[in-house]
Image (cartoon, rainbow, N blue to C red):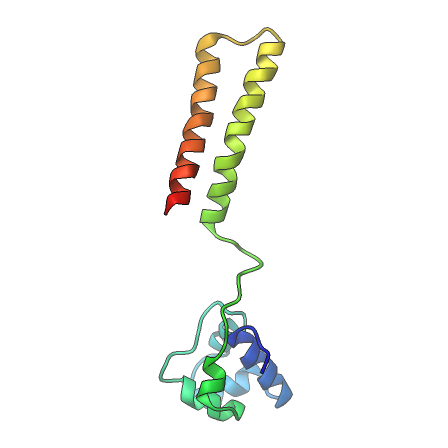
Length: 131
């Protein structure tokens, strides 16, 4: 099988068999919400459930377990957002210093404060990348 994730395997095979998420859930004694989460790769079946799920989908456990992790396309998480912020703030601070300087409104203390904030963000970003 050329599937990318366990969720895709479950969803594709379930549909091929003309079953609903509720049909699978009823056979496993779980909620259809759980099956939905599996198919969206938000959660995975409990290890005790996998053999019965494979039987329902008419495949062997090995085929079901050969799923590969798929990177998330939607929500990328707080870490991703933090990296964006840590890269954007230094640029914003630099632009703010430049513009206020060109307008003749920059005082030294404010300029150093803005540049310091920008440098701190760069430092935090670089330290995070080491992990």
